[in-house]
Length: 112
Image (cartoon, rainbow, N blue to C red; front, top):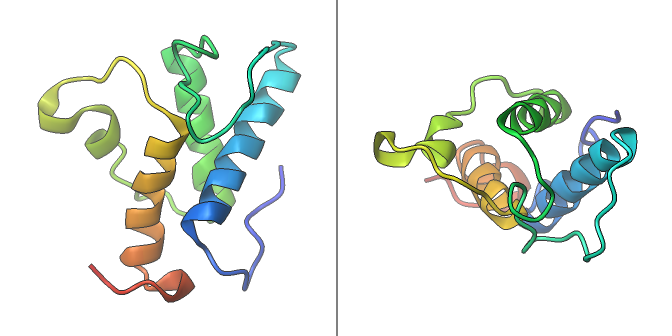
């Protein structure tokens, strides 16, 4: 697995591309096929049949990629204390955009 490129701007588009690439690599490693187009609108559980352990493995990959181990994943997967049943690539990208770009001021985004 390759890390996010040092010095490359982190944008929502680059985050989507990174998440799609990680998911695609995982699917290949697991020899799973998906007949649709893997993209921002893809649901990980209902379309790709990710288990909760698969999701955890993806989150670990993402943390390693961005060298960030302090992300509040519970905000995405258990808002208001209730576990969500499924998540889209776009939702992960939006979450990462808020926590990687806005908070860090990376990629030219305003702090928030």
